Image 1 (cartoon, rainbow, N blue to C red):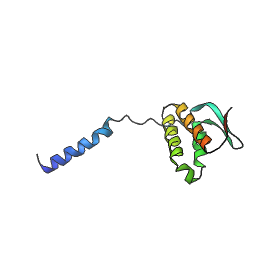
Image 2 (image 1 turned 45 degrees about the vertical axis):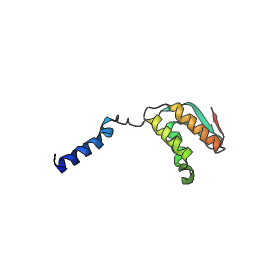
Image 3 (image 1 turned 90 degrees about the vertical axis):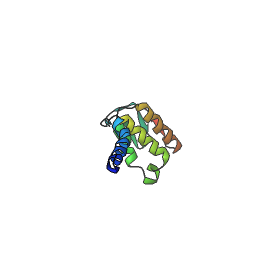
Image 4 (image 1 turned 180 degrees about the vertical axis):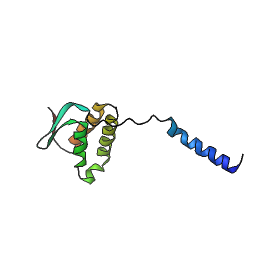
Length: 105
């Protein structure tokens, strides 16, 4: 086997994990939350897009915290067909930690 063949074979092996992954679904940000959430004096969240909008307006130092990064990951997963409840639970926990009042409507 030549050096080029070995190199090509190694690159091919490195590609397997990517080839075996399922393609990502297109995000559906219009998915509804199980219950609307009201953030006192600010806004009411009814869809995943509402939560995404809220997060875009957070200061960068908040968005970069691991807790908010987890919410963002759960939100993205829910938009791609994952469990919306997981995203809502993560969001409510983080809002509670931040001492932001949030109630179901």
